[in-house]
Length: 167
Image 1 (spheres, rainbow, N blue to C red):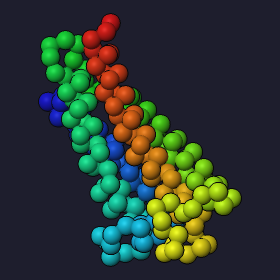
Image 2: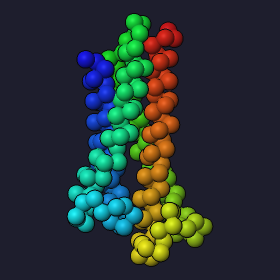
Image 3: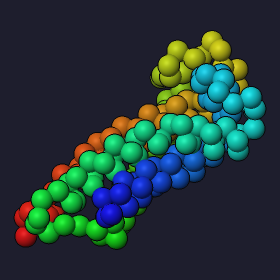
Image 4: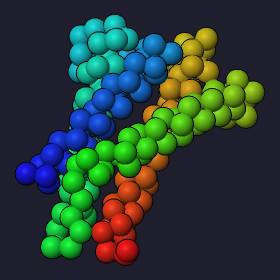
């Protein structure tokens, strides 16, 4: 039962992070979702796009993280960890991803505004020029979230194994 709880917690944490993250980026630049994403939802509402894409873009990250984290925490007889013992590390991973997203978003916006970087993904021709900086901030934040979440997830799994077997 603990393994299922770990999987559900990690998946829910990733989805909640995705929704909150997308609330910021969708309100910053709705074009990131209306132009640079396929039209999955028939709306231009930043709130609704953030909820929808927040779920679509993160459940598949949280689920494997949860499965691997549950395996790292529960497989074998030695020092099994519970979901309660993993909540803080998972929330720290989400906070770290948020900080990485903020820093990367600011950096991308600054570089595009300074003219030292093109609009990410080659979207410059389709995004209105007055939205280039905001779009770049959103794109940078998303890239950083995925990268830091992936690397941080691997680190978290490694630390979980270490926590169980090195005492």
